[in-house]
Length: 171
Image (cartoon, rainbow, N blue to C red):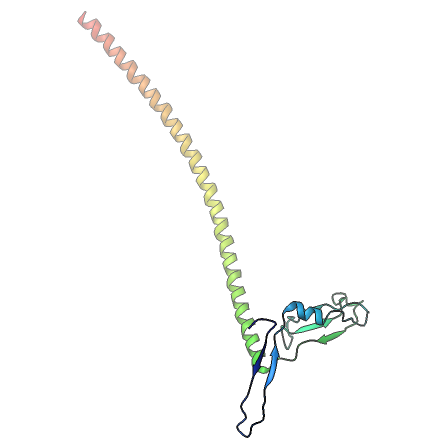
């Protein structure tokens, strides 16, 4: 059903033929804002339409109009007007349950972030250790190459001396 379509629901009456039908209309947010724009608080300032999600609100998620200076207690006029009708007990229970699930998910996310940060720091330490080991390895490779060159020189010198000695001996 689109946001501008109306649908007709009908309820059969077992006691007679009275038509208990009624129409509902779903509003999209722009229609809602247009219909309720221009509401002013006691300060004569246009009141913003907000959703009540403050902790302890009986009907979280209901739309309200309030003083636009609500953040400044010294200037606000305490204007308050519910736009939506109150929720049923079932709706309140469902919302409360969903909020609890959301809080648990937020805790899980927080734990995941803490674990990620720990692992990230550990990775940085390991990366630094790896770089240090690579540097030490490079130094050892260079030292080994120097030693190998030195050994090669001694071997070459030994062979030269041996050849010289053999030439002296056989000449």
